Image (tube, rainbow, N blue to C red):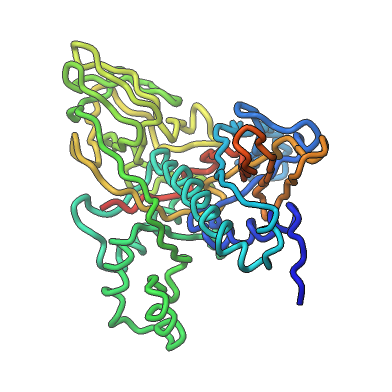
Amino acid sequence: MSNTLLTPTKILDESLMILENNLAFTKRANREYSDQFARTGAKIGATVNARKPNRFVGTTGPNLNIENVNETSVPITLTTQFHVDFTFSSQELTLIVDEFADRYLKPAMATIANKLDFDGLALAANVANNVGTVGTTPNDIKVLLDAGVKLDNEACPRDGMRTVVWDPATNGSMVKSAAGLFNPSPKISDQYDSGIFSPSGLGFDIGMDQNVNTFTTGTRTNGTVNGAGQTGSTLILAGLGAGGTVNKGDTFTIANVFGVNPQNRQSTAVLRQFTVTAAATADGSGNATVSIFPPINTAASNQQYQTVSAGPANGAAVTWDIAASTSYVANLAYHRDAFTLATADLEDVSQYGAWGARRNYRGISMRISRQYAIGTDTVPCRIDVLYGWAPIYQELACRIVR
């Protein structure tokens, strides 16, 4: 049987299917494909918007009580144009798809998949909730149950879209720990064959990813709240030590500031965890203004989006979850909609008569292009993706640290 000439569209279709199979974190996250650039082609710095649904309080009794509709959306900037470049000849375009995929597409897609996953897993720094103990690799299903409780307290849906992605060390430890637990035979067989932890009935789809990020905490000391009545996404702190640093991703609690369930706005009786969203350095007196998530919203300030039982008192003690100057691994338990990958079409070079194409598959747009280089007598090729990540509902996620 003679081979059929491979077209750029056929190559992209095969590439995207291979990419999907290589993704761990990304395929378990929300994906937003934007076709608004389909004609002109998007560039780095372009922005797409992901809309967040409204939240309401509701009213008891017969009287009408119109609530303000506060439409919100999260801008996602397309920050990264990533590509893999290589050379192949016209003769190699006569290979069958499987041969071409083995020689070129599989290694190229593995590189792109790892880049997408690594950048996406960096969003762990935006997640406030966390469980686990730094310095101890999880070895008990309790860590999954604890993460589930955190998500439950945030009214995270139990709709089959909860997942956990953790690093190889945690995966190996958890597989061993679950060896003696009761599981249906197919689950045990699958876990044994794949080497991936496969719990039954714990509410999570489990994935292993070597791209889980490692973070390092700042040099700050514990500190206190500097000023009463503070609300919103910034918090003035004192007592951080002269020149003490607060790193993005550092998490903390405040004395007597408890979280609330976002649906009934009742206290969870658990101290609200906050994460730092931008690095800051204290002045010579140890004071700093720190950007935080979630914002401090009290019933008095924003009932629809209330996050805490009460605002912090002046001088309230701040306790950091992880000691200063400590490196830790941040595995993630999350709902699919906690994080969004946005991609858009790059310019279609085939409209100029060039050899190339672009395709979208399951929310990821990819372009391939090839051109003869007369100066070097070669035929270079590139496969590009243009994307950006954003935390949309990071309250629907929880770090599992180690």
